[in-house]
Amino acid sequence: MTIQYSKEVIETLKATVAQKSSNPRWSEVFSNCFDNTLETTVKLTEAEDIFVITGDIPAMWLRDSSAQIKPYLVIANQDPKIKEMIQGLLERQVKCILIDPYANAFNETENGACYHQDITEMNGWIWERKYEVDSLCYPIELAYLLWKKTGETNHFTKEFKQAAETIINLFKTEQRHENSTYRFERFGERPEDTLSNNGLGEPCGYTGMTWSGFRPSDDSCTFNYLVPANMFAVVILGYLAEIFEEIYHEKTAVEEANQLKEEINRGIEEWGIVEHEGKKVYAYEVDGLGNYVLMDDANVPSLLAAPYLGYCEIDDAIYQQTRAVLLSEKNPYYYEGNYLKGIGSEHTPKEYVWPIALAIQGLTTNKKAEKIEMLNKLVETEAGTNYMHEGINVNNPNEYTREWFSWANMMFCELLLDCLEL
Image 1 (cartoon, rainbow, N blue to C red):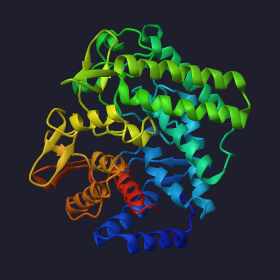
Image 2 (image 1 turned 30 degrees about the horizontal axis):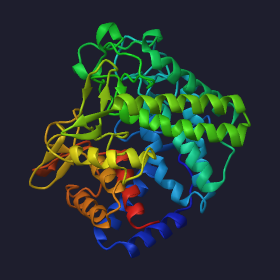
Image 3 (image 1 turned 180 degrees about the horizontal axis):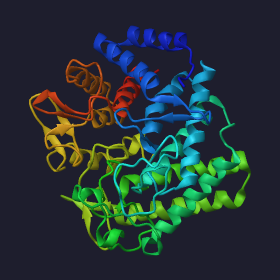
Image 4 (image 1 turned 60 degrees about the horizontal axis):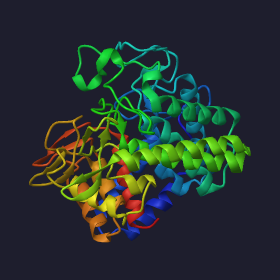
């Protein structure tokens, strides 16, 4: 079933974007992308909640669906149907978390469809069960932002509270992964698609941070304390403390969320900050045993996205020192070519920069000129499609991955709305 919404409200927003855009191509691409997500990826289910596919894959990722819908918050106060749509997505996401908080992607119905026959605890609702810390952070962020931007609180149900408590308990369990029951193995695919050590992952020491099996790229971590995901966890635990206090009036839950937030943040500060060429920078991953990897990935949460996530200010000294490393050849996934330069991913071919990373670069600068530069690059390299893609060859924009990738489309929209201060 298709969703109902006010096309008039959206057309008014698009007209405002066109009027404020210094480059007409910005509004052309915005118009296509903003319509496309609603028209092609969002579905009202028979259960009367909202299911959002990523685009070219028939499953719903907790991460992607949240990021795809987040830009519509800008019109949620003008169109009650848009607000209902966001609430419907949150209702479905809560159901998914309560089905299995370790899963990252779900089916619309209990149909048993899955990406691969993996060795892990599957059920008919799960499309994929790669445990990623960010999968549990994104729905909390969306729920919090809906409250703050519209005043709406109806989505804070007893089921939401149960899901929030489930997330906190899981994060606490995964502070000591050796006590976890989670295992994941995949055979016959890329080595990045499985966990070593019979599905347990590589050894790690206690840091206070919470363990993640996989990155937001769905590739396995090298070292399983994924620093940007823990940054996101710190932020959403602060949101949960506020929700528990203001909505549920649960003092014990407030204290529990705040304590876990402090433990994880202390772990980031003690283990996630390393010295590089005489300067303190954030590592991408650490293991609590002295090993770390210095890099960044295009997928969000990333180190580049730390201010976007709400973890730190843009002008924070350690962030700026980290940013300088990430946007240089010192980051193994930074590529520079004839048409583009920016951050790519192990998930896509070498020399492919992601529009999501370019959007994040624009969203994490106070320099208007840099935002404009990112927007111009994005509309110059969309290969005549008027849509964003997953990755783009830095030397040939006509070579790209994923024709239809709604997350990237909406990150472009979010950057443009930010640049135009809408």
